[in-house]
Image 1 (cartoon, rainbow, N blue to C red):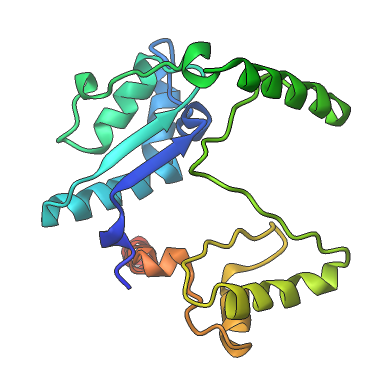
Image 2 (cartoon, helix red, strand yellow):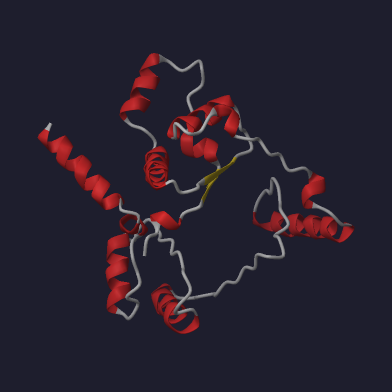
Amino acid sequence: VDVLGNIEMIVLDEVDRMLDSLSKYSTERDRMRRKRHPKKVVTLLEHIAAHHNSLQLPLQLIACSATVGRPIRRDLAKIDNAWALSAFEIVRATADDLLLTDAQRNEMKTARFSDRNNGPVSAGAIVPATISHQFVAVRKEEDKYAMLQYLLTAVCPDQPALLFLGDNLRVRDMVQKMRYSGIPRAEALHEAMGFHLYDSANATSTSTS
């Protein structure tokens, strides 16, 4: 499956934290350190943009943040020469865009009030009708993989799925386990997009330099 070629849109949430853009007051030392050690998300976006440009494929980038300033837009524009600073349109959602009816306003207030039991709530959102959420409660840690195997083989054997792992789990080990237990379509996203070849090439050039 050509995962990379199927990408038409990229959505970056909390892009200010992901890019950690340097301000105009940053020191020369900070700029040199960033140049030597670029953010991983920037390297990823550059790879995708270069691939799509070579094949003339369309690509849309949506960057979400509560604080969108010129440094963030400048860093995004640097990712692809085809993008200019003026190409990034700032879209701000107002309360009227999200809360259209009195029923929705009450639903928002109820949700925020209910969530106060779990800690402070800074904001909320109404989920569009086109999106539905489902969850499965698994009581024991050792039963989680059995449930995952059941969902991917019996419930949705042909539907695409994206699996997020905890910090204590290795992606490669999980892929091997899934393939061994009857889920042959399991593939590491990193490898499906060809980034393992990019890493190998960089490792080779670094060791020979």
